[in-house]
Length: 226
Image 1 (tube, rainbow, N blue to C red):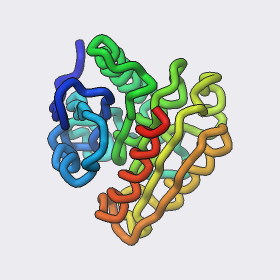
Image 2 (cartoon, one colour; image 1 turned 30 degrees about the vertical axis):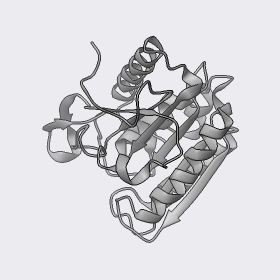
Image 3 (cartoon, rainbow, N blue to C red; image 1 turned 180 degrees about the vertical axis):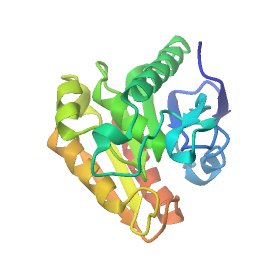
Image 4 (cartoon, rainbow, N blue to C red; image 1 turned 45 degrees about the horizontal axis):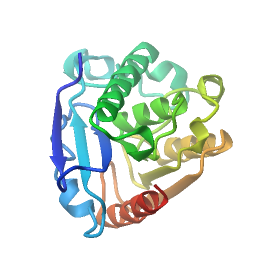
């Protein structure tokens, strides 16, 4: 079953799609307002797809049920292999793949799809990007981390996956996902062969106007290349 989604189209007959995954406890409406701030006037018509994560129990929140892409079992970013529920990550990657396949059925091929995510959604974006057999136009991972060790990432890496450009950004005052975890993840993805644009901003666990502007420039380059 496909995930329920919130969708926005910036023009008739979209030529590109952006699938954007929200963070822990949010839903698909969370990043919908960014469309108006992000989209350039000369961009091709886009379809933004904002899926709702399934509702599940989250260990670090006392087992409370909320929208989450996977369970988080601990606060220790020093052991990412244990922190993230690998079965939950794999399930969410499969759900993302189903959304990518639906965009193909609607006439938008993988090389014209961008996959984005914030926080926990960004972790799934990185995990999904690693196993892509058909490269996407690019990956966007904001205020997040690679939910596995570099060794596990290397083992999961599909041969064409590193062809996907990657934009990663983080707040230097982030109290939720330490900036060191984000930077280490960016370095790990670069070591795997990804062309990573890494940026830091004077903010907490959030998105800022400067970041949106830089992301817009990066996306514009993807459209020009496509």
